[in-house]
Length: 383
Image (tube, rainbow, N blue to C red; front, side):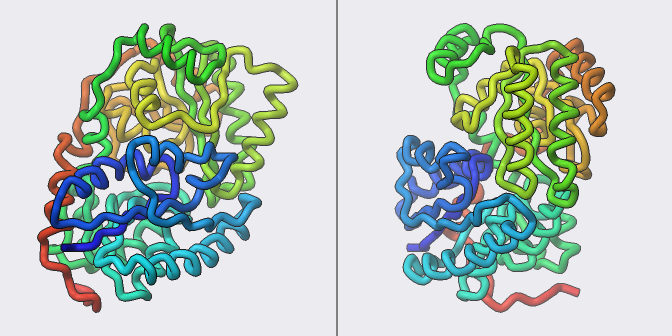
């Protein structure tokens, strides 16, 4: 029996990883363990570890790795603390393979700890091009990994160009499509009633609304507050009720959150509801029915592209990522953002695009994790 350890550090990576974890648990030839770390354990981020448990998953270990402050220095210190915590956890769990998703700074120490501990790493969504420090971390994790589950052919090509063994690169798509296809979507009125009852607020999803998710860009962290302020002014100018989900814990996020609270107190956010967290299921339903998603979240490109939901993508954070016709790119300019929102809302839904898979990713990945011969611990570059 192969021992597979999944590590999740934030809300979006587990929403995409969950179909793979669930499919792994269904197999008799796989022993699954799950480690929760990073923002999952933070009250200010909604303690999303509780969402994981509510889906029926057992948490086998928790890694408290986040140094408070949300600055470049605390991000670096969090990586150091994470190396210590993950090393102890992997020593205790002793997995054959550690599965990691994406490019987050709080995931990077799990890759370092596993590699130093002579544990093979399976990396989901390597080879993608984005803005900020995340892209560099993604490629670093690729170089520490032994199995590569990429989401498109462009990404597969990049991983191979990094010197990885082509036989260990699998173009399987993105498991987020599996998550979408697993949902029985409720009627909009029914969902609106339940959403308002569960989350409160003044925005009713029965009516037209925007979703706003804007994270700080690490390489531009000193501009994060101003960038968010520009977006809020554009949202106000567009005049469409908006559901805002707080940013992640990267450097600059604390300044963004402080600015949001000050703006809310001074000008009032009568048409903007702010949430620390919305469950992954409810978020996907919100995204399906939204008039437009605004900001710099990859959800505007991946999941929104599958739904055909219009997206206004702001700034450099998603630069270079494969995208569909639903995405309109703008800079951090109030006029540009407001105009793009109005154009996208007027356009309404785009045709569905399956750029990131067809909904069979999880089963394919789990079959490889369970049965594929494990590569040697010692890696060799191919050039």
